[in-house]
Length: 298
Ligand code: C5P
Image (tube, rainbow, N blue to C red):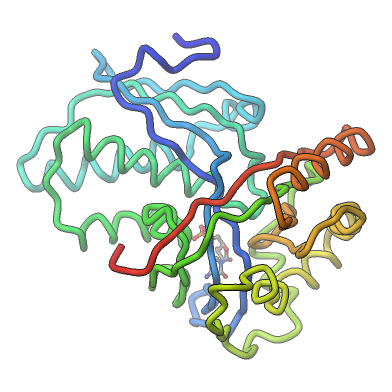
């Protein structure tokens, strides 16, 4: 069992945090889900999934935020394993027992898709470990069945997400210097959607911003931020704290409570993270970089 190293495992998959750089709620679907337009990217910082063949299925945990998950029987990692195995078995392929280890570095239920990233990394890792041969549309169906953010986490690169999140278009986006922060207070995603003043807002229009991405992102918004701030005042305190630094953009991700700030350089992000950690030792704060993306097919 790895204490703090995953080196003994056959496969290690990164599970990056998902950041909604902007999120517009543009409609409702009638089944409780909302239609979104979202500009999404992923961070170098995230969870890690490690996999090895085993005598019987095992699921183990480590990391700063593992305690909450350890108390639950059900989680998106084992659900992803079970659904992929069931799909493979209908095609006559074997899906033998596996030890899956989750290093949980991301705060739980915090608007950065931690559980979805873990599920996507589990699917990616198991498809390799089991040498699985499944058509893309079956993998996509498993992903969206696990959660609205799982398909975008499976893509794992900058993208525009539409529909409930499953309609994905890759976008060219440079690496961005970021501070990711969370007040370590949970917010209920359905409650935030229910508290929206308007569910039919203007679509997200991305102007060609290849030169000034930070300005382009600063001009966008997250429609879930006002209702989330009303339900959870700590989000406002966190955003105010980030705004005291040299940030070019401060915004909430997903339905919160995580917020991010963007900077002109990694050094500025690191300096901001260091000073915020001193002032707010009770918050989760990390400086990171987002993953770069190029145009083209996923
Ligand atoms: O699909 P997932 O389980 O991640 O969604 C959690 C909840 O978030 C849903 O039950 C729904 O209330 C809300 N949601 C939504 N519209 C989306 C995605 C999620 O209303 N596009």
